[in-house]
Structure formats: structure tokens, C-alpha cells
Length: 111
Length: 117
Image (spheres, rainbow over the protein chains, first blue to last red):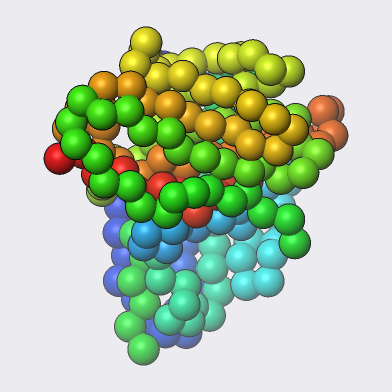
């Protein structure tokens, strides 16, 4: 089946630093979604990307849909302690509606 | 802002018992989903549901599982004869108030933590 690989697996940064994480797939995706999950909570949608090459921002977050349609990255600028959590990329599989998730990037921000 | 809600937030059950997890999707959404996340692992797709029938199911979603939309607002996941390995967070999601534009943007509920003893 389709696989999404996220890197890095985890990041430990200081407050105020910028963060970059990415996601690659074994096949083409038509949509890329980035979610954040806090402990014990459900994934919360951060950014949705629908077109190859698209660059979209949501506050301090910026995400891009790779030209090859096989990758995407998420940047967080000027990180703050509440950015702590697990960030997942996800995309629809080959079948209708099913989302395939990456394994997540665990972000820790030190004050 | 509309959101997906789930009840209960936590459920503890004995192995072999049946549980029903409940979800209220976002109003006017057309597509409904259940996902599972075993502790420390990634989110896994279980089943999608549209127009009162299952659209797709994963290999995890065997005869032990069933879904139902008993009325205009609720969407349920029933797990029969629960096993220890069914312990996980179960997330409901919905999408698709606009078939062509939004069908692939799924919004998740807060989850139900199921513990099978």
C-alpha cells in the first residue's frame, strides 16, 4: 500500500527557533494535509494543500505541495512552547476518501 | 466553529464484551470515517461511509466491526467480542460539505480511548 515517510522522527528546539519537517510518499498524492496532535487529543487540521507547487500559510506555519506530488514540507517560524506536539502529514490513498498518515514528527520546544 | 464530537471520551471493557463508540460529525458533511491509533503509533484508517453504506474498509475492519448511521446526526462504530489488541484511541472524522472541493479534507473528533482488560 501507499507509504508516507516523515522526517525527522523527533526534534528538540529552543523557543524562537524555526522548524522544518518533511514528508515523502512512494506514489503521487493529489492532496496533502498537515495535522497536529496533542497528547490524548485528536488530530487537528493545520494546512490543506490541493495543487502541486502550492505554498500555503496559516499564521507562523507554511506548507508546500511538492512539484513532483510525492513530497511536502511544513515550516514553523519562531516556535513557541505551545507548538509542542506530534505533527502528521496525511494524504488520500489510491481509494476514495481513505487517508494515509505518516508516522509523525515529535516536536519539543524548550522555553 | 463546527466540530466533530465523540462519546465517551474513555471506555474500559472486559475482553469479549461489545462496545459502541459514538460520533456526531460536522453538520452537512457527507462522508464519515473511523480511524484507530494504537499507543505510540500512527493513525490507521478503518472504514469510510457515504450515502448510508461503507465506501471502503481496511483489513483491520473485519467481521468484528460494524458501523451505522442510525439517525441524521450520529455515526457509530460497534466492536463485538473485544480483544486485548483492540485497545487504542478511536477517532471519528467527517468531510465533504462540498463534494468536489472538500471531500478530501477530513476533520477529526477528539477520540475515544478504549481499554480492553
